[in-house]
Structure formats: C-alpha cells, structure tokens
Length: 96
View (cartoon, rainbow, N blue to C red):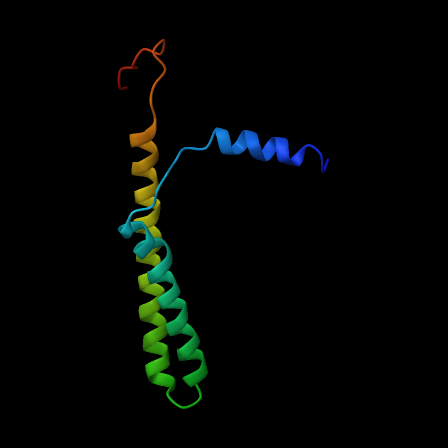
C-alpha cells in the first residue's frame, strides 16, 4: 500500500480545484474560532475567582461559535453552488 500512496496523492492533487483563500476566509475560518477558544481557555482558568463573568463569557463565546459555524456552512454551500458547472449534455431540469 505504501507504493500506491504517492500515486493516489498525485491523482487527488490533480483533481483538486485551485482555491486561494481570501482575507474573509482566514478571518471566519481561522482567526475568529481561535480567538473564541482562547477566550474559553482564559474563562476556564479564571473560573474559580470570577464565576459569574466566566459564565457570561462562556455563553457569549458559545453563541459566537454557533454564529461562525452557521456563517461558514452557508459560505461553503454558496461556494459549492457557484462552482458547480453542469455538463453540456445535461439539460436544466424544471422546478417542481
């Protein structure tokens, strides 16, 4: 199997689209979730001394992570829809 791995990897890389992330993608997919988890870490460390503030911070971060996940799912769905190119032999289907 180790001999087939470079062949499969080469095939996968050839068939992959050449996507270059924009600044918005870095912010929503990397920066904001990382900051949320950092706030959760700080809230967890400070919980014994500042319990009420920690609970509010945890609730706020949970809502923010939910919003980020919803935004990213919508963004991926829109991107897939925009990137899909129908085959020339495929006739458009009428809506039901």
